[in-house]
Length: 584
Image 1: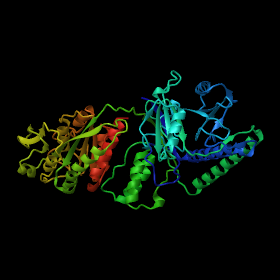
Image 2 (image 1 turned 180 degrees about the horizontal axis):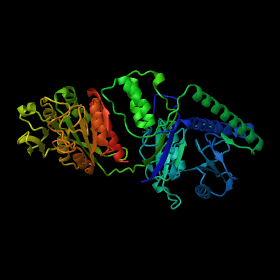
Image 3 (image 1 turned 45 degrees about the horizontal axis):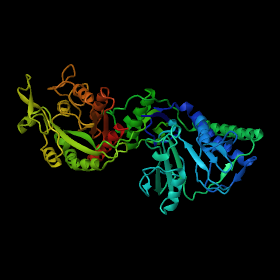
Image 4 (image 1 turned 90 degrees about the vertical axis):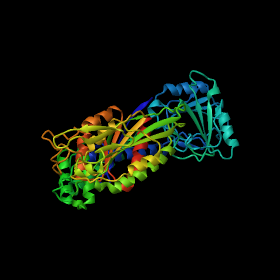
């Protein structure tokens, strides 16, 4: 599998619509970043215009365009094979045009459109080299000859370039074609070459497909002018560079003027999320966190505080401005297509807070079951085109340690299909039914919905017995390709380490332990089994604080404020992302 590191830079100057970038650049460097980006674009524009004002001429060639690509080296002579070999050996060569009529070979960089016929007579033999460092982002504007387009015919094998072109001309629906070739440097046999005819070709470009080293593309009725550059001009180049430098000076002066008179400069890098304090007003808290996040160098804290500030309608004059954002390099993997896999098993476990305040969330969770199953069954995976998604589901319900729960005659934690009951003994509570284990997975949505529809408990104080629920979930038999646990709650777990919102005389100990231990223990067990944990909460400060504490154990833990009506949509979104990313 090939990997390529890619960096993206964004220049949102004093914009409150911030990208979810991973690093916030020190604003004192913003003018230089903006100037550099602007100067680069201007320089490219001016240098591309340089040949137009000095010495070149246009050759009207029917359908062939190697411009604004760059020609380099003298035209070579020989045959098509030697032309291809010359391009392969030249690092900056992206394509080569071989003219059999004159026996000439022209190597090119940054090639655009290609068409085999031209006014000079004869046929141009076209070769496009896609070096591995471009996978999977190689895009040639004007064509979209891949399987994502609309196929006119089935895959044709054993075809030459001319055969593929002729086949496209014979079809009234064909707009473009792509000839997928094997490694011709080791074999000249075209028996394994593939020709795809396409309609509805798009300007986004065509992408690399599995198993190919060389592509030859063809666009019907494409008429573009190929530019033949003239001799260089040192004077003209100097003029262009002087203009670029002057524009850089002007842009830099304008940016510095804006920063001096209207902007605020702050420094911020990644750190932690902001945690609201209930004793402060919402607006004052947001203003306080916006300023403190910069002093703590917390980019993520700034973003979360900014969201809170916008909700609380904090004045724009009180909101500090981020000048530029930069995304750190990420590793993208090129997926290998595997047609032999016919099934992808997914396990999804709901962990539901059944205390009295959760009526709406429980109803939405029940309704979400069938929607999630339906959405996952329709999902297609690019790297596994023949695989159907097979979903198994489970559910865990948890209440709290109080007299009302005992009146219900239920365990404090119950699991769908569970039979075993763990007993907990203490001076306060004797032989209390605590935690069911041995739960089962099911594909029967009706049975699971019926189980979820059990009545709510009392609730009592704010902390609830989430730790026991995680313990029950960790004891499920996780054996799928992709595993996801979704916790839906509006309150934190027991323990002073996780929330100080309300004192719990029964479960709070001087050590911070809860009745069932620390939640990190079952969370680590879930991590070891490859389970992704998602906590969907109502945005309460205590729940957010707990989630941030648990993220210290599981950095991949996802938590988000979600309205009840968005439950199914959010779960499907996480599942789709996990399944697709897991196969790339």
